[in-house]
Image 1 (cartoon, rainbow, N blue to C red):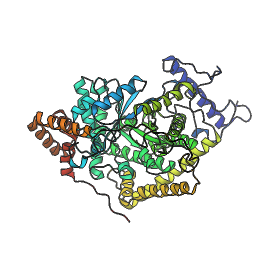
Image 2 (cartoon, rainbow, N blue to C red):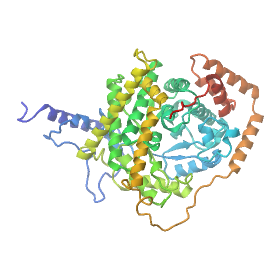
Image 3 (spheres, helix red, strand yellow):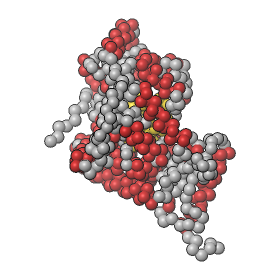
Image 4 (spheres, rainbow, N blue to C red):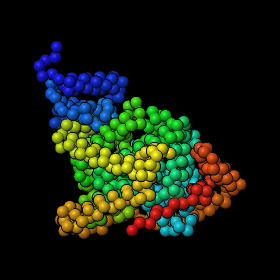
Length: 577
């Protein structure tokens, strides 16, 4: 007989604790807990997780839960970071492939756990380096990639089978990805064992970053092809990283970043389902990319709410039954928009605070911005400081000893609930747009997808983001919001900051190499491969294999994107006033 005052909530708390204890014990028994010192600086033993005390009743605790179980508010694993620390993944790319390869080797040698590729503007727009529209931009905001041969150099002496590789590119993501596969083939790697993430998120391009090649529908077709190919051939590789980062950098609030990003994610789930893919197989291949801004607790709450919302929608709306298909995995980058050109050393502090918020929010991997990125690509010294920032947090602060250490905080839990509620209002608004777009309710891909496409066409997303950016800017100029060194505490010692400068010689040399590569290849083979791509584009066949064939014979990025653009046409955003 239960004791007086013993109720169902209390029973749930105790059952949950027992489930967590069993899961943690199993992880220990199978070697999935790190052999490390899990004490405070003073030597005090700390538990792997904290929750309600035996006999204590916490109303609504099922929304908080325990690490490693639905709704995953407190993290994906019962061990938290005791099982595996987050991956230190530094975003890097500048000049040509050889220069960036040297930076990658430096990052890996100094403790980086994975590579993250930044591409230059011509590459991001699917242009070759010798395209007239590329003039003056080659190698300046990332690395220039024109063909698979550049990928060979980019990853030279870096075994791709052993290193996770993230590539931040969306419009021409698929052709760039197949060039990466060709480079791996040439290394002798087992393609099926490759691991990493390709951004590929075209929705956020129309919403925020504006780097698209075609209308939305052809892009979605390519993404569907990629999802199917990876599910069948490269199961560990994540073909989609749904990006909120660029939405936040464009001026969105934390709640808008979360809602727009998860809505985009739901759209890609609908895309996979519309292609007949198994949600239990393709959903674990979806990952997310969030911004970590300066409001410390708001960011922590955002990350916790993201996992909870995603798990609930995946289970209750889309029918995912396994934990892996319900779990939201995400990479975080500290807020580039928070960096200031004034008193740039302050950016080290900003980045550290943002990184700590990401870790306390349970990020799976993390990039820390360099202090000089507001002015130029990171210098080697600034990149090392950014890397060491993560390592100090990981090795010295003790924050990885306890899973979700702020779980149960009245403030954090209230903020988590508030952000979740705001996100649900946005989802309702997108559904309203879907009903306007498709009154019959017979959506070609899915309801959220129809709403997103209508919101893009109507300029709703960009309008909402612009309004939020305006409100913040007014508050900044009035002094209601303060930025040290910009509108408060502006006195400083002036020092010259040495920044990385990319020589225009990089562009000349890249074009020289590209011309020699074109002259030395089998042009007839290139022409056949490109023609075959167009043939498949006119059917419902998967384009990955014919695109791979084109990359293997050194068809360039501009040529691959160009023939598809000739077939599908471009896209111009409708003018609005």
